[in-house]
Amino acid sequence: MLARHDRGLDPHDIAGAGVRPVADAADLAAGRAAIEALRVEGPVLDYVVSLVRATRESPSVVLGVSPRGATALLHASKAWAWLAGRDYVTPDEVKAVVKPALRHRILLRPELELEGATADGVLDGILASVPVPR
Image 1 (cartoon, rainbow, N blue to C red):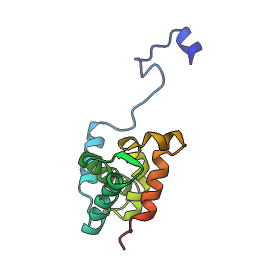
Image 2: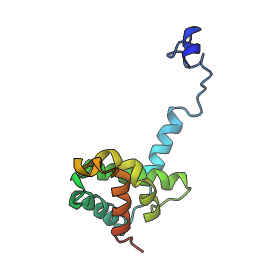
Image 3: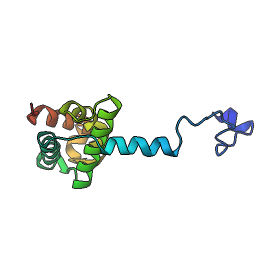
């Protein structure tokens, strides 16, 4: 990478770097509309709420997930379901995106971090303890 910069690479010249568009604005708008149209049944919404609440009640966490984080988890779950070709969200989609959507939204107790605890480990424990809707 440094050698390419030394030879004059302009990181702002995207086309010159060989990057080509794969979707235009209309494609992105259509994808967003399709994701927003996905169904989310009450039990799955309750599952999202329960997972988020568990982050706030965990003794390992100083600061849990906010309501805005809950909406981020919901939207990520819908996007994951859409990518899987479904028009509805299952608990499996929620579980698949919990860590990437929430790991940066929780603050662990400092003493636990010193002992090697991680946000992913805490989220794994929460996933194991919160009942999954059927």
